[in-house]
Image (cartoon, rainbow, N blue to C red; front, side):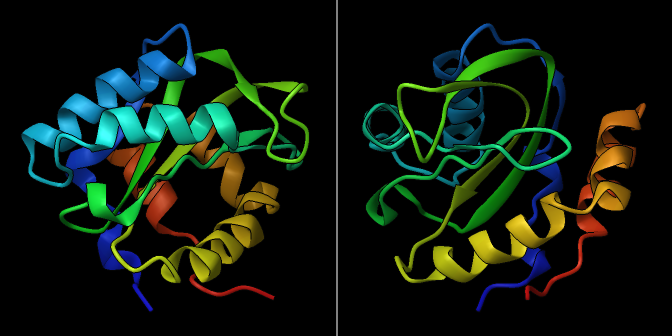
Length: 157
């Protein structure tokens, strides 16, 4: 199982200015490619996967999105924490016709297709804890945001 070492500081984004989930993918995908985390298949495959299988979850207190794509688009595993400047409409994982206003995005890249199951459980466990989520919204700098994200409990129920 991957550990917290895959939460990447150099992929962390605070108050990313995007108007849609596709624009989030464009901006972050370019960063992932430039830094050698993904190959050229990443952008088309994540957009295609998101269109078929949206990744927003109605966790309380705030909906989140956890987009990921096929392992063959990933060169190095990563978790990229992203807080958006404004909410964007994102498709509901359990009902693609439903949309949520998402401000927190946890972009995942993993090479072993089985790794994402436990990782999603860990993330869900943490995203349901307001004492962990609230500092993600109140962080003033990228470093504060990264440290708050990195303070997650690396376990699940």
